[in-house]
Image (tube, rainbow over all chains, first blue to last red; front, side, top):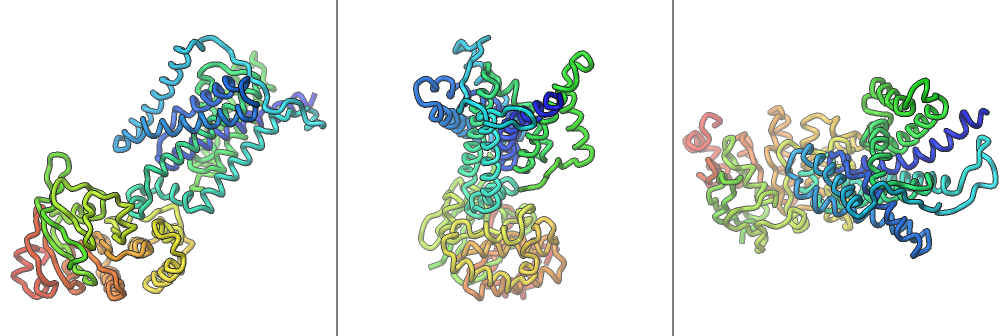
Length: 295
Length: 238
């Protein structure tokens, strides 16, 4: 009984939260480097999931997953080159609207390609479950992979920002683009790097979460992941990679604990209300978010 | 041959012309001061030399090579650095990280960078004391020192410093100018953009700008000692 009330939502919450965290890190990267909210991020995930789905029968599943990530990277790079860079001297709100238009365009292409109303089943990267229970529940290898991916991505990016010249240049560009140019940093290249990374993280989230859920629908990155990932990024502080990591996990846990323990008769959509309540509390107590600093 | 030669340089913002065809030379090893009132075109001049703005006509030659319209990163690589107006330090990074970013185009020249950092800390001991402090928490004067130090870390042959004394107390401005003298004595050619005529004491050559044109070129001493000249070209500020 306790396993059902706590164990299942905790395990599912952590796994789902890990996917939110991956996308939230991508959002934070873009925000840190260009102070833009990227509304196209959800569709980087959808494209990653589609690439995985379309290639899974033609190549081994791990290769299909890599293809999904690469498609996410390409989507990020193209968005920077074709949408963001031409608007570099326009107000940030113009760029924000342009990223939303990019998402709508990608969704429209999915519908035009005949995906309307369809559900796409995707296999796990690694089938089976761990040979032992956690909190009374079996945990699948797929769920474990999602967690490991988040930990690796979060750790690698934290090292990137704190230990490498390129990471430092990325932080500098977000704080003072003109001064960065005067240091000889090629700001456009840094922007491409961050958009490519963010696209890759979105693609990875799409590749990992869709098999965890068993299937996905067109535009699922925008409808199922984007709002939660934005909330996770804001919870974490919007400029903090570890914050996005923590924010994603917290969000996944809150959402699943509420969903499993508050019946829809008592409070319809309890999981969304719970997320909103947590967000408001965190922002009231700590307006900069859980780890709101440059990190 | 002059280190920097500017010929008939014209720059505009959209259809509005700002520089109306200016000519001047900067000799290697000297300190040149670019004076003028607000809106005279001083910042536009140094921003164009540093590659932040593209000229509509004219030429800029650095060490014998045309550089007008070139990418800022390439100009830093060849030894031309601008310390911008308003300091523009990276506020959420430490003093040490700011200095490290100054080395971006030369970051593989480890020994020279280490020696230059020692030199920066010798010029500005306060930066050594506060090397782990976030730049945004430094005072205005300390941020100016950091901006100059960060510029030095790029190992420049020509350093352009825009409004070094802006917002500083007279005593602090004097200190900054004295350090600029030492930087010049140690081999870096300097162009200082200023509204403060007190800088003339530290100048080998002076240029005065008015409405996008150079209206005076001569020695710093000549302009400093000539009351009539100063009143003519710099009005009440003289």
